[in-house]
Length: 325
Image (tube, rainbow, N blue to C red; front, side):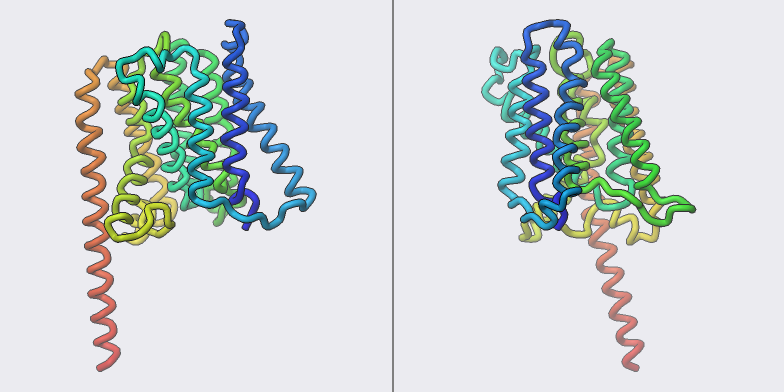
C-alpha cells in the first residue's frame, strides 16, 4: 500500500485548506487579492515536500490506509475550514443560513469523491479535471477575477503537462505516472472550491447551476453508481467495475475511444453552462435539463448494465451448452 493511499490525501486537503484560509483571513485588501493562488500553492507545495521527503527517505513505505470515516471526516474538515474562511460570502446573514454551510460542505465533499471515482482509467480523471479547470478559467477571465483566472489557468496547464505521461499514445502504450488518491482528491477539492468561488460573493454573476454543468459527468456517474450499490445491498463506498468508462469498455470501445468520448462530453456540458451564463439563460431553464439529464443518465446506465449482463450471461450459457454436446 503506497503512502499516497494512506494519510497523504487527507493531509493534502487539510493543510491546503488551512493555509488558504489563514491567508484569506488577513485584513489587507491587497493581500487578499494575491492570497488565493499563493496560499493554495504554498499548501500543496509544503505537503508535497513532506510527501517526497518521507518516500525518498523510506520512512513510511507501507503505512496503514485510512478508514472510511477518517477519510470522510478529514475531507469534510478541509471543506469546513475553506467555507468558514470565505469572508466575502455572508453565510450567516441569509434566510437559509442554517443550511448554507452544511450544504456547501456536502457539495465540496461530493465533488471530491466524484472526481476520485473517475480515476479508474489512464488519463480520464486528469483530462476531465483539466477541461473543468479550463472552463472555470474562462469564466474567471470573463468575470474580471484575475487571481482566480491565473490559478485555474496554472492548474489547467499543470494537468496538461501531467497528461503527457498519464495518457496512452502510440509511443506510450501505458501511463508512466499516476494521480493516485492524493492527486485526484486535490483536483476534486480545487474544482469544488472554484465552483463556489466563482458563483458566490461580490462581482460574481456565474450562476451555481452553470458551475454544476461543468461537473455534470463526474457528479452524475458518482451519484448513479452509489445509488446502484445501495440498491444492490452493498456499501456505496466499495469499489467495483460499474463506472461509465467500464461500461464503454465492455461495449467494445477502446481505451482511447472511451477517454475521448467522456472528455468530449465533459467539454460539451461545460459549454452548456458557459453559454447559458453568457446568453443570460434563466437559471430554471438551465436547472431542469440538468435535473432530468442527471436522472436520465442514471436510468440509462442502469438499464445498459442490465442488458449487457443478460447478453453476456446468455452468451456464456450458449457456449457452455455447445461445449457439452
